[in-house]
Amino acid sequence: MQALVVEFLIHAPHVSAFEAAIIDNARASREREPGCRQFDVCRDPAAPRRFFLYELYDDEPAVQAHLQSAHFLQMNALTAGWVEKKTVWRYVRVAPG
Image (cartoon, rainbow, N blue to C red; front, side, top):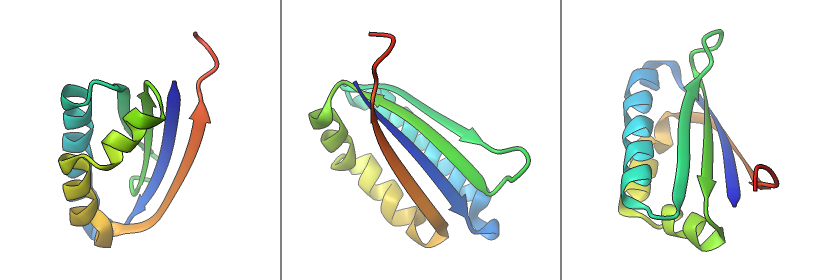
């Protein structure tokens, strides 16, 4: 499985709107993408502008399908100006198997 870990730092005026948009994207990913196994959205209570995503996909083609999905592209375009910083890490899940 492929794991994506994404951290966002959002400009303060857009935190609530970003939270709604990223939750909708996560829900659509879980419901519409057969290769998406998990999509967690977390927010740092000590730094409310910081969001953390943990996503699991069957394989690299499932990751690419996600990145090309209409709901992802729409959310990404909508929120681009709200993001101060975005960091993406890619991992291969080794356990549990």
